[in-house]
Image 1 (cartoon, one colour):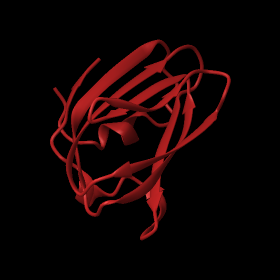
Image 2 (cartoon, helix red, strand yellow; image 1 turned 90 degrees about the vertical axis):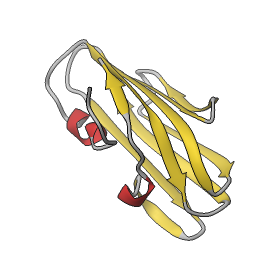
Image 3 (tube, helix red, strand yellow; image 1 turned 45 degrees about the horizontal axis):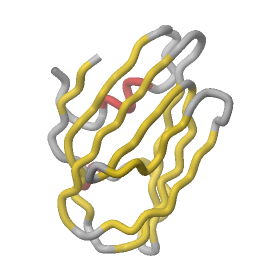
Length: 116
């Protein structure tokens, strides 16, 4: 079991093939606002917040973006990541009216459990 959202950073630019991760936990959203999640990934990624699909991406389209209104407080999150052959890449960013585009801020991180 791995704890912490930093597992995402571990997945960046690996040269291993055919693996996957499921991360479950929460994000502590600081303010009620419209948030834009932007994703660049190779090969497959799925993001759910409070049980609703926010982003789902498969190989062939390297970029996806979704605008979603989130209320302040803890939001359940589930991330599924799968890597097929070749190099791996995963870059998930967020922005809002009061937040420049960046990786998910550490201050939002809750405890996570992962499986692979």
